[in-house]
Amino acid sequence: MAEAATELNLSHKMMISRAYHDSLFMARISPMGMIFIPCYKGYSHKPEEYSSPEDMANGVKVLSLALAKLSLD
Image 1 (cartoon, rainbow, N blue to C red):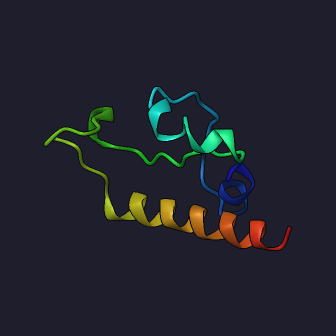
Image 2: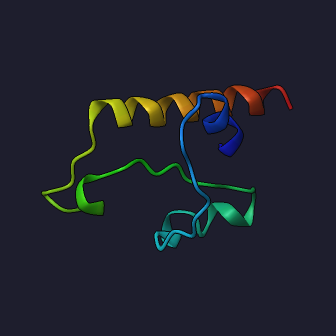
Image 3: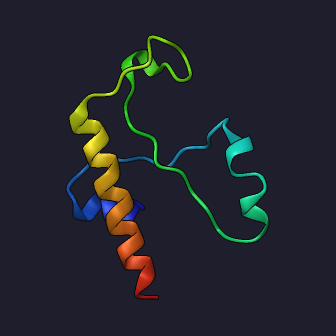
C-alpha cells in the first residue's frame, strides 16, 4: 500500500491502528493492512465524520493499485 501511495504521489505514513478488531482474525491467516483516509477532525464512526470525495477517490486508487500489484506476485 505504501508503494502504491508513493507511485500515485500521495502522502502516507505507517501507523498503528487502534481498530485492531478489524484485523485481528485476518492477521492470523495472512499479512494485512488498512488504508485510512483523512476525515474531518479525525472523527470516525460519528455523525460528524466527513471525508472529501477527492480523499475517498485517492483511497480507492491506492487500494486498486495495491491489489493489482499483489495479483502479479
